[in-house]
Image 1 (cartoon, rainbow, N blue to C red):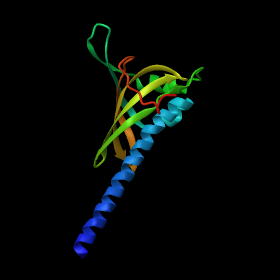
Image 2: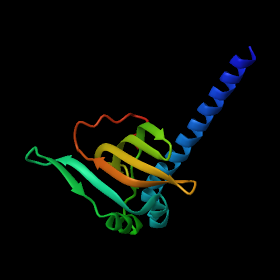
Image 3: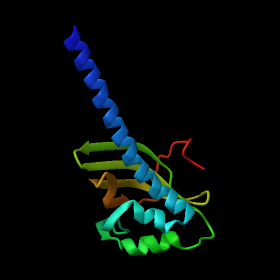
Image 4: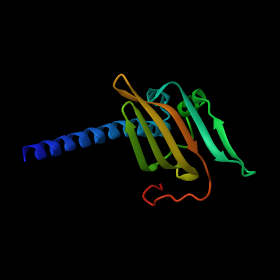
Length: 156
């Protein structure tokens, strides 16, 4: 009976630790979107390692699959610029996977300028745990303007 109780307690402890790790990882991901909403390039940079890899995957007008390398510094500069309209990118369907110091996050998103829909897709993040902090080292997103199924509670 004592062994069963010990195994149950250890299982709860590990489950709690995994949940805590997922929350820490999602905190970093959510800070990216908060930085975008508030034009805070300093907060954005804190979420990433130096010189991360960023890409966009999309289908062009000719139906060809394209993988475009993005310039991270350009992204930082764009986020930090004052804007007439707020960049709002709500997310849902968060999937977090962790193995040691490596994590991946896959989320659906919709991008709005203020309340006006622009596009939707998926953001896929890879993070590394360094010196006790999760940092994004790779980000790729997809973008499309149609076939977007956005939950009602996500829409502005």
